Image 1: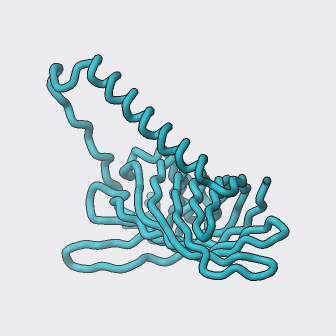
Image 2 (image 1 turned 30 degrees about the vertical axis):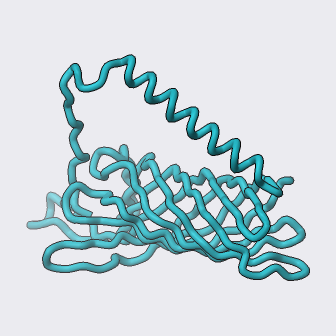
Image 3 (image 1 turned 135 degrees about the vertical axis):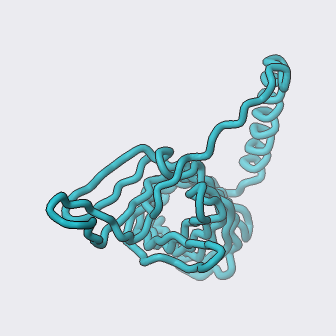
Length: 230
């Protein structure tokens, strides 16, 4: 992955928005969010909390004027918690997850004893704190489980990056070479069992460009297992 700079900040004139107006706007936003949350919870038939963890298979989709395609997949993991808000045939699952994404890369390593740098295979891991909100429809309810399908948006804040190659690992701040935050859409298929076990498989389709150069977008296949706490 080529080194790129994080996008710069925009500078607004001093009178663009007064402090009073900002405070008023934030209060209105918090009030709207609180009302929406109260409405959802008041109509919910069940509200459960779920701890979950699983494995990610991820890559980065590269899109340039001359070529486009996925890199090689690597394995990572996801772990965190969701709130399962249940209605008659519908579920809403907001969550907060730690998610490791990335891809295989070629790393150039300089050597003073050689005429030029050597190229070795390595991995680049992008570590995110991710907030998904999935809207799910129960397509089948049987004696011991209910099966659902759906999806929704996510926003991920990049925490750090690590590059491993030739037996060495280098870690650095996410904003040094990558853009922040990431965002995209999830598709999800899963089942909730009567013994409180949850199993799901998903695909994360990144829409945000994690680089300010060529377009690089996250692509993630995930499989997770969770346990409902009622």
